[in-house]
Each structure stands twice: as structure tokens, then as C-alpha cells.
Length: 251
Image 1 (cartoon, rainbow, N blue to C red):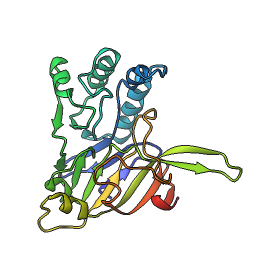
Image 2: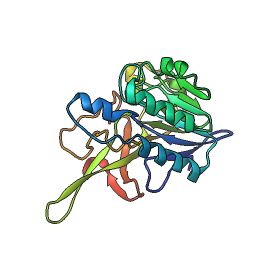
Image 3: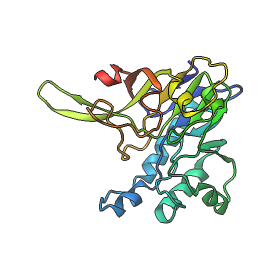
């Protein structure tokens, strides 16, 4: 497969034209600082997040890292512990990195310039196509070129599913959503798709396990993305370990 989840992890590998990439979404560096503003006190998870990502890079040995938006957690330019986490993470990376700009990455370019970081390219929020794969964060409408890829990958949604046992206990788990990409909502938005070629749509789970998300099997739960769930035709949910849960809207 062009895009293949890494078993047990909120990450996937993607086969690009001449490169192999590790892809993650919604890293949310500095999330504890953001939550603290709302009165939620959590131990700093920066070191753990960095170790997990570096471990995946060592395991998969990619040529490139692609972050599907929201590398940082604050909306403005990262400051304090968030900025320190960003600097430590980028200093530890040894391969080129593509950041698809998300809604939390508004001033990320200024921070990268100030930190004098090399090897990190930031795409527009409308996304980028790298060979057969289109990448967008998902908070806004992707470019037609992105949608013309064989597989389109998005984040932003942080999809979750609530699983219950026979005695009524339950837990929420991060899930993948995957199905065919329905062009209808994009055409209705006014995007000229030209000669449409069938594509797959993959909605990534959040890399950050503290970021919450959309519970896809809760009645009345609204999606965050302007094109979801309409663009996800026949979407099915999968746990991080690869377990197929079936159609996400019938769990």
C-alpha cells in the first residue's frame, strides 16, 4: 500500500516518488502549557513525545518526516516550555521534515526562523502533493492538486471511538479512518477537480494522546473538518494495532 500504518502507533509510512516518509499528525508540542491556561495541570510530556517519535524514526528508517499539521499547540508563536520542546525536537531530527501547516501553526515560520532551524519546509494550509500522496491538515479546503493524488492524508480530527464491554465499562481509543474520497463536497465548494481519478482518504489519529478529539461513534458528534464526514465514502475505523472495527458510523 502507498500509505501503511505502523502497527501499534499513531503513525504511517508513505511511499513517495523517490522517498519513503514517516507521517504523523497533531503532535501538539507544548500541550501541557495550553491546558494549564484552562486549569488542567499535567506533568510535562515533552520528553516522552520526543522519544516516541525518534523511536518510530529509528524503527522505520524513512528519508523524510511529514507532520500533518499542528506541530505545536498554541495558536500564536510558541513561547516558554512549548518553544523549548519545539527546539529540542527539531534539534534531534536528522532527516528533512515537511510541516503541512495546521490551524495551530499560525506563527510557526517565525519561530523556525528565530530558532535558525534548517531542513524544515512549511507548506500552505491547503496542503501539498508529494508523488502519489496528497497531504493536508484538514481544517480548511485542500488544493485540487492534493485531491488528485492516489491517497489523501489528513489530520485535525483526532478521531476516537468509545469501546464498551459486556458489563458496561468503556474506554476511548484513538482510531484511523479510511475509505474512498468522495469528490462531491469539494466540487460543491467550487474546487475544479478536472478529470477526477478515484482516491483513498485516510484520517490520521492524533500523535499526542492528550489532545482529545472527535468521538466518531457518538450520536450527534460533529466533525471539525469542513469536508468531513461527507468526503469519507464507506469509511471504516481501525485501532492502532490494526484491528478492523468496521464502518465508523455503525460502531
